[in-house]
Amino acid sequence: MLDLPDLVYASLQERKQRHHLKKGGKELMDEFLKEAKERVKEAQKSVIYRAVIFIIAGLIMVIWPLKVADFVCFGIALILGLFGARFIVNYMKKDLVQDFFRYDLVFGITLLIFAIFFIAKSESIMSFIPTVIGIIIIFNGVLKLQNAVDFARSNSKGFQNETWKKILIAAVINIVIGVLLVVFPLGAVSIAYRLLGIGVLYSGVSDIIIAMQFKNTVNSMSKKMSDTIRNSTIDGEGKFVDDDK
Image: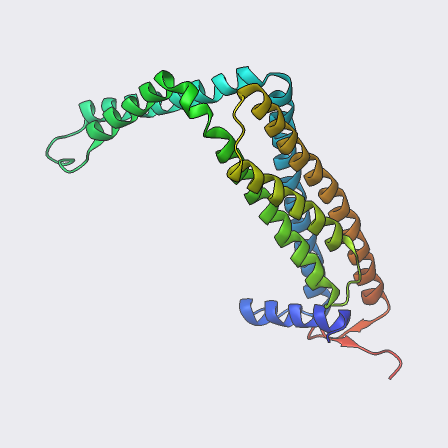
């Protein structure tokens, strides 16, 4: 099993070989820590943004379930209609010689037909939306599952933490909720969307909790790495040298 110095050294050597760097150990280490912090910051932003969207969507579904159902159908119809109109306008403007095999008119008319269908059959389409949202919740659960696996793998690399267990539980709950929505879609629209809202709300709140756990765990890892670096000597190759020898 690699201990922390070996892990960092292996990462530095891989970076040096990949980019053909001719830098000393201190420079390599500074770049390593800077890049690690940037990646952590970007990952946290991504999780928080996704969580905020889920929380807002969940609250709206719980408070205004019927309006959400109508909004989804008409929103999709509007988007399809706009894209359809754009294709038709592009067709009218295009050069028939240069763009002979472009089917903008066909695409435009097809999208307009789908837009009309979404408006005319909105009640029928509403019954499929719980399934679609269930799939989204399952996907979000799978993302959490990978986070749990990543943290579990870090235990074998010298970082001891139990965060992965909490994330794993949240991931399993997410996936179970999503599967239930896909397999057993609810009939009553208002009840369905309120329960959907609760599921989406849970997904967002659990993302926030995971982001906080992630931050705490990364801070712990960074402290351990900093202590290791501070108590070690780094040679010109970026290799840790035991000062006691």
